[in-house]
Amino acid sequence: MMHFRAIVLAALGAVTVAAPADGPVIITFDQVETGKPLASYTDRGVVFALSHPPARSKATGRVMFFPHLKTPRKGILNAMANESIPVEVRFPKPAASVTLTLWGSIGSAAIVEACDAGGKVVDRASRDVVPARTGPEQPIPSFELTVQAPAIAFVRFSGAPPGGYLVCDEVRLTLPAVVAR
Image (tube, rainbow, N blue to C red; front, top):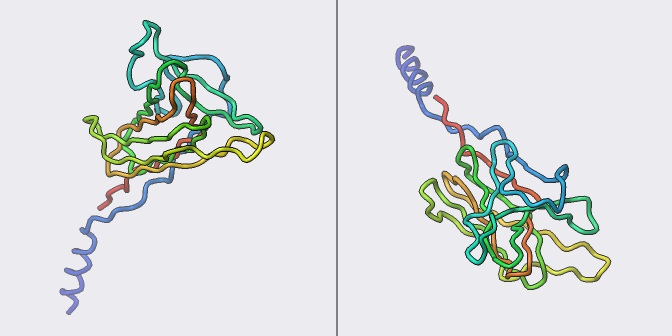
């Protein structure tokens, strides 16, 4: 009987167990300078840039930071006002879940696409229209969109028409479970 218990315990010790990662990585933009266009922005290895160069201009594509009026928050957006180019957020390691906190101009849609390392869209979340504020004294309402897949290499957010805006003021990503033996 003791021999049987030793075999069972040894077998259980060899079972692979998925443990949760160290918790979500949260990126905000509260300390950045607003209104200054940049080709890209990097925080903790996460790179924010336009997903492709402008088609209607020879200018270099840029992102910039914008204040969330009536709040202390700031967010990142496409700085090319005449073209609706998605902002791409690339991760140093694949993520299992990504949540973006967004807000936008009246009438804008919101689309978040999760892509694998090969660029294939593996999940998508969207809103037909972003929420509008109920009065001029109110801040523009924020909302969240979440995408999930086993190995998200990057996400893209878009949906604002030319002249409009869709701003991301927080990125929360969860890494896949760590496999331990």
